[in-house]
Length: 228
Image (tube, rainbow, N blue to C red; front, side, top):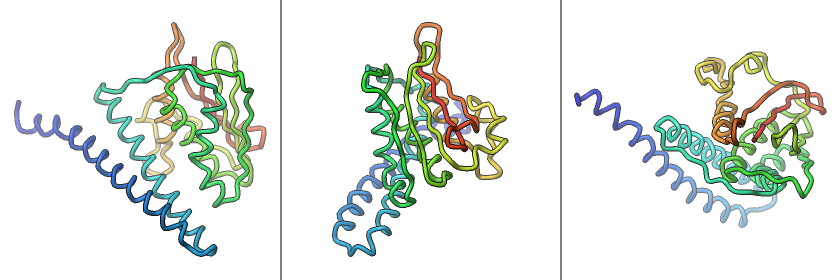
């Protein structure tokens, strides 16, 4: 193996190790922020909430990067079991509660207690949290997250009252990262990540997938995750 080939083979290993180290440091930082926030005066609490939220957002982005690295290196796999869909929605909402408080966004959940989902809990809840984060950042006042059974799939929906998805995202093939817009900054990388997670969920001849449109009941964007 020549020097260039060795360097190319080594880079993914270094990347994976570095991401793990940064995530560990961020975990320590988040713990310190939470301790300090409890000692602050009421007028400083929002500043610490913002700091905690941004650190969590970096941590979440690193998690996505690590997952995509594992997918690219063919080392990614799911740990699937049966869960209540409501638990997945509650976990996704809990991940984004800080942002809801900071921006005064009302997040509502619609899901029956008896709706079940066979999936990887951690990856699906994180994927939903990623989309919920985006919905809250671009909504005006309200977001609705829901789950229901539709034609042999479990459908998770996230709807907001914002201005909707831009046309370049609506036109993009979310399963192909080469179609994402890296120039404007609104890349859709989170959507690509969620689409990748969805595609790993399979049941017989069906695979998971995502759809986006601007047909939200609230007048803005609607994200749909279908799991078989």
